[in-house]
Length: 336
Image (cartoon, rainbow, N blue to C red; front, side, top):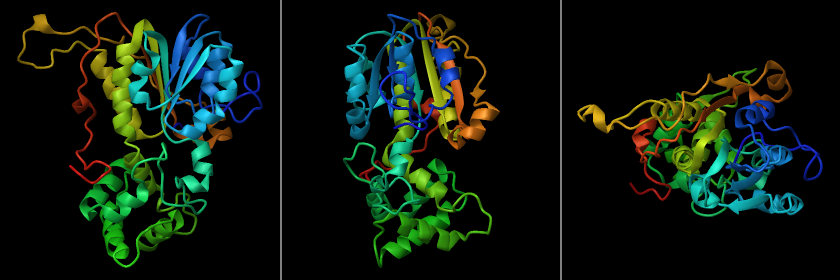
């Protein structure tokens, strides 16, 4: 469930591609022999391989069963220093079962998922309108064919940052009455038909709507928020949290979380100062972007941003998703 993870050939087989901002991630994570690190977004195992090479033990999580299956060989070669967990990184504290020294999260969809047409994440290759990372539950076709136009517009507008979300949603509502949407290319061409496409446009007009659908189908922003709270609970004092994001919505959430957790908080301005809670993370450093060279060599890295912070000894705070400012939408079943 990650963007940009790949691997090298030092541990675990042939090279694929270097994970996004690998050097910067390792510098911020600083894994050491004997430590335990959670890789919450295993993917093709790029970060995990590098962390193992540094001598640390890894608990690696992925909600995609294909990623877990592909990682079993690396798990065997690690001789007990790697444990793969099929599940959501929002439960990383339960997966670890103990306090850990580091947590790394690389947010987004993996190149493996994008490149496999039958997963329905991309319209570059025609496939079923699916997008489910876990291969279970309702998929993108269920959302497109059943949700009210107003809810679709909010999904495209907020999660996809599509300026013409209303037009796209109204087109879908009208078209599906004659023929439901079942294939990625059908939906992409329908969106292109209503929005148009100028010669030389680098971004396909359906890109933002597809992003919004994928994020909604997999509850990616909700998962990220819960994962940040879980990392707060499971990191030891001095433990490092490292998060790589690929678009502004994710980065904004991480920025808000670290700003909230690195300041004193009372939960209410009306409470006396005596009940203020201590910061659970040290003040984070500046956001780091991929180098110009990496951005040139790997287009996936162009929008990548890394934020990191160190856990203090203060007790973890309760979960309060309101700090993220996410909209209220129906759940994937269409219920509110």
